[in-house]
Length: 333
Ligand SMILES: [Zn+2]
Image (cartoon, rainbow, N blue to C red; front, side, top):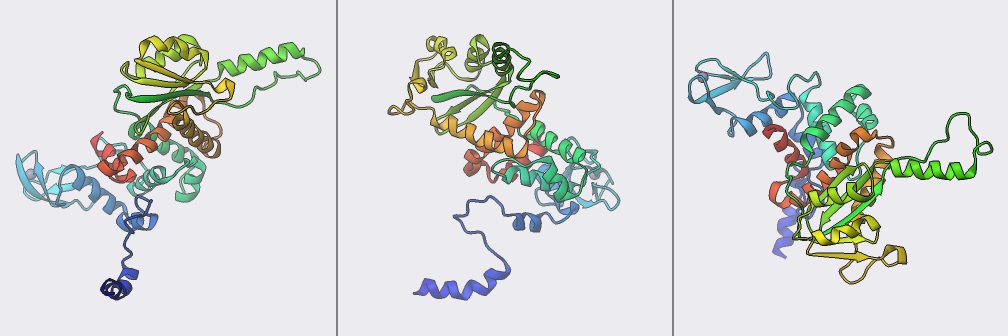
Protein backbone atom coordinates (compact mmCIF):
# COMPACT_ATOMS: atom_id res chain seq x y z
CA UNK A 1 0.00 0.00 0.00
CA UNK A 2 2.75 2.34 0.97
CA UNK A 3 4.48 1.78 -2.33
CA UNK A 4 1.37 2.66 -4.25
CA UNK A 5 0.94 5.94 -2.37
CA UNK A 6 4.52 6.88 -3.00
CA UNK A 7 3.94 6.19 -6.65
CA UNK A 8 0.89 8.41 -6.80
CA UNK A 9 2.72 11.23 -5.10
CA UNK A 10 5.51 11.10 -7.60
CA UNK A 11 3.34 11.13 -10.64
CA UNK A 12 3.01 14.85 -11.42
CA UNK A 13 6.75 15.24 -11.11
CA UNK A 14 7.33 12.29 -13.41
CA UNK A 15 5.29 13.92 -16.13
CA UNK A 16 7.56 16.93 -16.27
CA UNK A 17 10.73 14.91 -16.05
CA UNK A 18 10.00 11.60 -17.68
CA UNK A 19 12.16 8.85 -16.28
CA UNK A 20 13.14 5.92 -18.39
CA UNK A 21 11.73 2.61 -17.29
CA UNK A 22 14.56 0.29 -16.33
CA UNK A 23 13.08 -2.42 -18.51
CA UNK A 24 13.00 -0.26 -21.63
CA UNK A 25 14.62 -1.90 -24.61
CA UNK A 26 15.70 1.37 -26.16
CA UNK A 27 19.09 2.79 -25.28
CA UNK A 28 18.30 6.45 -25.32
CA UNK A 29 15.00 7.71 -26.65
CA UNK A 30 14.99 10.34 -29.37
CA UNK A 31 13.44 12.79 -26.89
CA UNK A 32 16.18 12.18 -24.35
CA UNK A 33 18.79 12.52 -27.06
CA UNK A 34 17.43 15.87 -28.27
CA UNK A 35 17.22 17.13 -24.70
CA UNK A 36 20.83 16.19 -24.05
CA UNK A 37 22.24 17.49 -27.33
CA UNK A 38 20.05 20.44 -28.34
CA UNK A 39 22.81 22.42 -30.08
CA UNK A 40 26.43 22.47 -31.21
CA UNK A 41 27.59 23.86 -27.86
CA UNK A 42 26.16 20.91 -25.96
CA UNK A 43 27.78 18.45 -28.37
CA UNK A 44 31.13 20.21 -28.19
CA UNK A 45 30.91 20.25 -24.40
CA UNK A 46 30.45 16.49 -24.46
CA UNK A 47 33.59 16.00 -26.60
CA UNK A 48 35.50 18.41 -24.37
CA UNK A 49 34.55 16.57 -21.19
CA UNK A 50 35.18 13.17 -22.74
CA UNK A 51 38.70 13.96 -23.95
CA UNK A 52 40.12 16.78 -21.88
CA UNK A 53 38.06 18.05 -19.00
CA UNK A 54 35.91 15.52 -17.10
CA UNK A 55 34.40 18.34 -14.98
CA UNK A 56 33.96 20.59 -18.00
CA UNK A 57 36.23 23.33 -16.60
CA UNK A 58 39.64 21.97 -15.68
CA UNK A 59 42.09 20.41 -18.10
CA UNK A 60 45.78 19.82 -18.40
CA UNK A 61 47.22 22.78 -20.30
CA UNK A 62 50.18 21.60 -22.39
CA UNK A 63 51.64 25.11 -22.46
CA UNK A 64 51.40 25.77 -18.73
CA UNK A 65 52.24 22.11 -18.20
CA UNK A 66 49.72 21.83 -15.38
CA UNK A 67 46.01 21.66 -14.74
CA UNK A 68 44.32 24.97 -15.48
CA UNK A 69 40.86 26.40 -15.61
CA UNK A 70 39.52 26.77 -19.16
CA UNK A 71 36.59 28.70 -20.62
CA UNK A 72 34.66 28.28 -23.84
CA UNK A 73 36.20 30.36 -26.65
CA UNK A 74 33.54 32.70 -28.04
CA UNK A 75 34.44 32.81 -31.71
CA UNK A 76 35.45 29.25 -32.41
CA UNK A 77 34.80 25.65 -31.41
CA UNK A 78 37.51 25.65 -28.77
CA UNK A 79 38.30 26.14 -25.09
CA UNK A 80 40.85 28.65 -23.84
CA UNK A 81 43.28 28.38 -20.92
CA UNK A 82 42.41 31.14 -18.41
CA UNK A 83 46.10 31.57 -17.62
CA UNK A 84 48.02 31.46 -20.91
CA UNK A 85 45.30 31.79 -23.54
CA UNK A 86 46.04 28.50 -25.30
CA UNK A 87 43.17 27.08 -27.39
CA UNK A 88 42.19 23.42 -27.30
CA UNK A 89 39.96 22.14 -30.13
CA UNK A 90 38.02 19.07 -29.01
CA UNK A 91 37.10 18.17 -32.61
CA UNK A 92 40.73 17.94 -33.64
CA UNK A 93 41.69 14.51 -34.88
CA UNK A 94 38.07 13.27 -34.93
CA UNK A 95 35.81 12.62 -37.93
CA UNK A 96 34.15 15.96 -37.15
CA UNK A 97 37.27 18.04 -37.72
CA UNK A 98 37.00 20.41 -40.65
CA UNK A 99 33.49 19.25 -41.56
CA UNK A 100 31.14 21.91 -42.91
CA UNK A 101 28.28 20.00 -41.25
CA UNK A 102 27.42 21.10 -37.74
CA UNK A 103 28.31 18.88 -34.82
CA UNK A 104 24.67 18.63 -33.79
CA UNK A 105 23.82 17.00 -37.13
CA UNK A 106 26.75 14.60 -36.85
CA UNK A 107 25.53 13.55 -33.42
CA UNK A 108 22.03 13.05 -34.78
CA UNK A 109 23.18 10.84 -37.66
CA UNK A 110 25.28 8.79 -35.25
CA UNK A 111 22.28 8.48 -32.98
CA UNK A 112 20.05 7.26 -35.82
CA UNK A 113 22.62 4.78 -37.12
CA UNK A 114 23.17 3.41 -33.63
CA UNK A 115 19.45 3.12 -32.87
CA UNK A 116 18.03 1.63 -36.04
CA UNK A 117 17.39 -2.08 -36.19
CA UNK A 118 17.53 -2.47 -39.94
CA UNK A 119 19.67 0.37 -41.22
CA UNK A 120 18.74 3.80 -42.50
CA UNK A 121 19.16 5.18 -46.00
CA UNK A 122 21.08 8.31 -46.96
CA UNK A 123 17.83 9.47 -48.58
CA UNK A 124 16.10 9.41 -45.21
CA UNK A 125 18.95 11.29 -43.52
CA UNK A 126 18.81 13.85 -46.33
CA UNK A 127 15.12 14.42 -45.63
CA UNK A 128 15.47 14.48 -41.86
CA UNK A 129 18.37 16.87 -41.43
CA UNK A 130 18.14 18.93 -44.59
CA UNK A 131 21.55 18.29 -46.12
CA UNK A 132 22.17 17.17 -49.69
CA UNK A 133 22.08 13.49 -50.54
CA UNK A 134 25.81 13.58 -51.22
CA UNK A 135 26.54 15.02 -47.79
CA UNK A 136 24.27 12.51 -46.03
CA UNK A 137 25.98 9.70 -47.92
CA UNK A 138 29.44 10.99 -47.06
CA UNK A 139 28.62 11.36 -43.36
CA UNK A 140 27.23 7.86 -43.14
CA UNK A 141 30.21 6.41 -44.96
CA UNK A 142 32.54 8.11 -42.50
CA UNK A 143 30.64 6.78 -39.51
CA UNK A 144 30.61 3.31 -41.01
CA UNK A 145 34.26 3.14 -41.99
CA UNK A 146 35.77 5.02 -39.05
CA UNK A 147 33.53 4.12 -36.16
CA UNK A 148 31.88 0.80 -36.98
CA UNK A 149 34.69 -1.33 -38.35
CA UNK A 150 35.88 -4.25 -36.32
CA UNK A 151 38.91 -3.10 -34.35
CA UNK A 152 39.31 -6.37 -32.55
CA UNK A 153 41.01 -8.65 -35.07
CA UNK A 154 41.18 -11.63 -32.71
CA UNK A 155 39.84 -14.83 -34.24
CA UNK A 156 36.45 -16.00 -33.07
CA UNK A 157 36.41 -19.03 -30.79
CA UNK A 158 34.22 -21.49 -28.94
CA UNK A 159 31.24 -22.88 -30.85
CA UNK A 160 31.31 -20.92 -34.09
CA UNK A 161 28.55 -21.06 -36.69
CA UNK A 162 29.66 -20.26 -40.23
CA UNK A 163 27.51 -19.69 -43.30
CA UNK A 164 27.71 -17.74 -46.53
CA UNK A 165 25.36 -15.88 -48.83
CA UNK A 166 25.72 -14.06 -52.13
CA UNK A 167 24.74 -10.42 -52.53
CA UNK A 168 23.40 -8.74 -55.64
CA UNK A 169 20.49 -8.53 -58.04
CA UNK A 170 19.31 -10.89 -60.75
CA UNK A 171 21.48 -11.45 -63.83
CA UNK A 172 20.84 -8.83 -66.47
CA UNK A 173 20.24 -9.67 -70.10
CA UNK A 174 22.95 -8.49 -72.47
CA UNK A 175 21.96 -5.48 -74.60
CA UNK A 176 19.95 -6.18 -77.72
CA UNK A 177 19.28 -9.76 -76.88
CA UNK A 178 15.93 -11.23 -76.03
CA UNK A 179 14.88 -14.57 -74.72
CA UNK A 180 14.17 -15.61 -78.29
CA UNK A 181 17.55 -14.81 -79.73
CA UNK A 182 19.68 -16.37 -77.03
CA UNK A 183 20.20 -20.06 -76.83
CA UNK A 184 18.64 -21.29 -73.54
CA UNK A 185 21.76 -23.25 -72.75
CA UNK A 186 23.88 -20.10 -73.14
CA UNK A 187 21.44 -18.17 -71.00
CA UNK A 188 21.60 -20.75 -68.24
CA UNK A 189 25.39 -20.68 -68.31
CA UNK A 190 25.39 -16.88 -68.18
CA UNK A 191 23.08 -17.03 -65.17
CA UNK A 192 25.36 -19.41 -63.33
CA UNK A 193 28.45 -17.38 -64.25
CA UNK A 194 26.76 -14.26 -62.90
CA UNK A 195 25.79 -15.95 -59.66
CA UNK A 196 29.26 -17.35 -59.16
CA UNK A 197 30.83 -13.94 -59.73
CA UNK A 198 28.60 -12.21 -57.20
CA UNK A 199 30.31 -11.08 -54.04
CA UNK A 200 29.88 -13.51 -51.20
CA UNK A 201 29.31 -12.50 -47.61
CA UNK A 202 30.81 -14.94 -45.16
CA UNK A 203 29.11 -14.83 -41.77
CA UNK A 204 30.69 -16.20 -38.61
CA UNK A 205 29.25 -16.01 -35.13
CA UNK A 206 30.29 -17.30 -31.73
CA UNK A 207 27.34 -18.91 -29.98
CA UNK A 208 26.37 -16.27 -27.42
CA UNK A 209 29.14 -14.01 -28.66
CA UNK A 210 30.63 -11.99 -31.41
CA UNK A 211 29.48 -11.71 -35.01
CA UNK A 212 31.73 -11.01 -37.97
CA UNK A 213 30.97 -10.60 -41.68
CA UNK A 214 33.62 -10.76 -44.37
CA UNK A 215 33.11 -10.02 -48.05
CA UNK A 216 35.01 -12.62 -50.07
CA UNK A 217 35.38 -13.06 -53.83
CA UNK A 218 33.82 -16.50 -54.09
CA UNK A 219 31.96 -19.15 -52.11
CA UNK A 220 34.20 -21.82 -53.54
CA UNK A 221 37.36 -23.58 -52.45
CA UNK A 222 40.35 -21.71 -51.16
CA UNK A 223 38.72 -18.25 -51.00
CA UNK A 224 36.18 -19.58 -48.54
CA UNK A 225 38.40 -21.81 -46.41
CA UNK A 226 41.12 -19.16 -46.19
CA UNK A 227 38.65 -16.61 -44.89
CA UNK A 228 37.33 -19.05 -42.29
CA UNK A 229 40.77 -20.05 -40.99
CA UNK A 230 41.80 -16.38 -40.85
CA UNK A 231 38.80 -15.51 -38.68
CA UNK A 232 38.06 -18.58 -36.57
CA UNK A 233 40.49 -19.99 -34.04
CA UNK A 234 41.60 -23.63 -34.56
CA UNK A 235 40.49 -24.51 -31.02
CA UNK A 236 36.88 -23.88 -32.07
CA UNK A 237 34.05 -26.24 -32.85
CA UNK A 238 32.92 -25.29 -36.34
CA UNK A 239 29.23 -25.57 -37.26
CA UNK A 240 28.27 -25.34 -40.93
CA UNK A 241 25.83 -26.74 -43.44
CA UNK A 242 26.89 -29.42 -45.90
CA UNK A 243 28.17 -27.07 -48.62
CA UNK A 244 31.22 -28.85 -50.09
CA UNK A 245 33.69 -26.01 -49.67
CA UNK A 246 33.50 -26.37 -45.88
CA UNK A 247 34.65 -30.00 -45.99
CA UNK A 248 38.44 -29.40 -46.13
CA UNK A 249 38.14 -27.28 -42.98
CA UNK A 250 37.58 -30.37 -40.86
CA UNK A 251 41.30 -30.92 -40.38
CA UNK A 252 41.83 -27.33 -39.13
CA UNK A 253 39.42 -27.55 -36.21
CA UNK A 254 39.00 -29.71 -33.14
CA UNK A 255 35.53 -30.55 -34.39
CA UNK A 256 33.40 -29.76 -37.43
CA UNK A 257 29.69 -30.45 -37.08
CA UNK A 258 27.66 -30.44 -40.24
CA UNK A 259 23.94 -30.00 -40.55
CA UNK A 260 22.67 -31.65 -43.68
CA UNK A 261 20.60 -28.84 -45.23
CA UNK A 262 20.45 -30.54 -48.61
CA UNK A 263 18.67 -33.46 -46.97
CA UNK A 264 16.17 -31.03 -45.44
CA UNK A 265 17.57 -31.19 -41.90
CA UNK A 266 17.98 -27.94 -40.02
CA UNK A 267 18.46 -28.85 -36.39
CA UNK A 268 20.08 -31.91 -34.89
CA UNK A 269 20.49 -31.39 -31.15
CA UNK A 270 23.06 -28.63 -30.81
CA UNK A 271 24.08 -28.90 -34.41
CA UNK A 272 22.47 -26.07 -36.35
CA UNK A 273 23.35 -22.77 -37.98
CA UNK A 274 20.28 -20.89 -36.81
CA UNK A 275 22.23 -18.08 -35.13
CA UNK A 276 24.15 -17.07 -38.23
CA UNK A 277 21.09 -17.53 -40.43
CA UNK A 278 19.18 -15.17 -38.13
CA UNK A 279 21.97 -12.61 -38.49
CA UNK A 280 21.86 -12.98 -42.28
CA UNK A 281 18.09 -12.56 -42.20
CA UNK A 282 18.41 -9.24 -40.39
CA UNK A 283 21.23 -8.13 -42.69
CA UNK A 284 19.34 -8.96 -45.87
CA UNK A 285 16.03 -7.45 -44.77
CA UNK A 286 17.80 -4.28 -43.70
CA UNK A 287 20.05 -3.97 -46.72
CA UNK A 288 17.16 -4.56 -49.13
CA UNK A 289 15.08 -1.91 -47.39
CA UNK A 290 17.69 0.75 -46.76
CA UNK A 291 20.43 0.26 -49.31
CA UNK A 292 19.11 -1.72 -52.31
CA UNK A 293 22.15 -1.05 -54.46
CA UNK A 294 25.52 -1.32 -52.84
CA UNK A 295 28.63 -1.46 -54.97
CA UNK A 296 30.86 -4.44 -54.14
CA UNK A 297 33.58 -1.94 -53.32
CA UNK A 298 31.66 -0.63 -50.32
CA UNK A 299 29.87 -3.82 -49.36
CA UNK A 300 32.28 -4.61 -46.52
CA UNK A 301 31.60 -1.31 -44.78
CA UNK A 302 27.82 -1.87 -45.02
CA UNK A 303 28.01 -5.36 -43.53
CA UNK A 304 30.36 -4.01 -40.84
CA UNK A 305 27.56 -1.68 -39.80
CA UNK A 306 25.23 -4.63 -39.13
CA UNK A 307 27.89 -6.64 -37.31
CA UNK A 308 28.74 -3.54 -35.26
CA UNK A 309 25.15 -3.17 -34.06
CA UNK A 310 24.93 -6.85 -33.17
CA UNK A 311 28.18 -6.72 -31.20
CA UNK A 312 27.50 -3.34 -29.59
CA UNK A 313 24.16 -4.66 -28.40
CA UNK A 314 25.99 -7.58 -26.81
CA UNK A 315 28.54 -5.21 -25.18
CA UNK A 316 25.83 -2.88 -23.86
CA UNK A 317 25.99 -4.00 -20.23
CA UNK A 318 29.72 -3.40 -20.19
CA UNK A 319 30.19 -0.42 -22.52
CA UNK A 320 26.85 1.38 -22.32
CA UNK A 321 24.22 2.43 -24.86
CA UNK A 322 25.06 2.06 -28.56
CA UNK A 323 25.21 5.82 -29.20
CA UNK A 324 27.67 6.16 -26.31
CA UNK A 325 29.84 3.40 -27.73
CA UNK A 326 29.93 5.20 -31.07
CA UNK A 327 30.75 8.51 -29.41
CA UNK A 328 33.60 7.00 -27.39
CA UNK A 329 35.02 5.52 -30.54
CA UNK A 330 34.78 8.92 -32.22
CA UNK A 331 36.86 10.63 -29.54
CA UNK A 332 39.36 7.81 -29.13
CA UNK A 333 40.17 7.59 -32.84
ZN1 LIG B 1 47.79 27.44 -20.17
